[in-house]
Length: 237
Image (tube, rainbow, N blue to C red; front, side, top):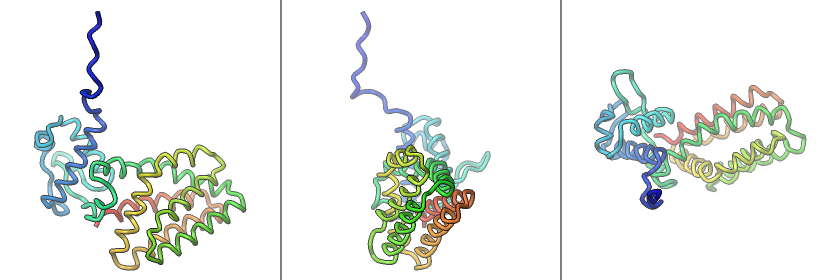
């Protein structure tokens, strides 16, 4: 007779979830210690012992932190703090969602850069008009005290729709919750800084739309990737 399967409630956490917890724990350590830019993190062994996890899980979390621009790995010397997430970030997302939410940038670099490229090639006059209207709605929101993330989302989604491939918008929709958290946080953090930060954010969107208008496929892809990379940096002090 086959042995009973263990109850689902007692199943071990999936490695991905453990890595998310390690990621959040390291970010919390950076914030609480506090560790300055350039400070060395504890060793993988020490972090693994502290979190009660394997070094493999901690190593995965560190790799993702490096990809997100928060830490930097130096061969043979360990991991160091590269950027500290803004203290305001925690008001927009729970710490245990940070890894998943910031991880969407890696998907968006591929998805939205290619969407912008195809939109530049395939957009109809009507779609371009809708994109330009969304751009102006975003400009009005950014220059006011409105949150602006709904307008930001609408612009990005219209670009995905202009690819003439419904799969782009469908995949982007799967990321909507995390993307809108990031957009909301990005505007809030940027408004706490000098006014030119919001202007730079608007300039990035202008460059994307200008390239789509000019049917400059490579320019649109580069402008979108630059905007996303800068957006990730804006989440750091």
